[in-house]
Length: 157
Image (tube, rainbow, N blue to C red; front, top):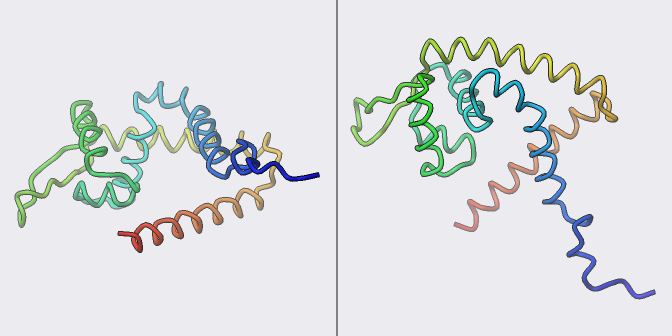
């Protein structure tokens, strides 16, 4: 039987769709916690970058770390500043540079997020059809794919 020439266009044969769907479903698992904490997933990942660095960080560095454009991150940071999660200040060496720092409120949110990740992590591992070892391997493989695609984009620029 001749293979359908459009097999590559079937949703089930795409790599991008399961990654997209998985991302949406995982974020959905977090949503009730985010609602209680008063943040969104994009705010959460910005906070993780800042918590990890622990110092005022340029907007460009945050965007690069999150693999986002600065014009995507800037409005997000402005909303976070309005919420009292971050402070924005001009750089001392370059006034065009904007540095983002954490507030006391962001440090309180950090404790709530730790509780959230512990609760989600244990429930996910208990009820997941994959073993912890399989999840770790998937995590490592996804990072390899991310690094590969980032290098490919750099080469194409």
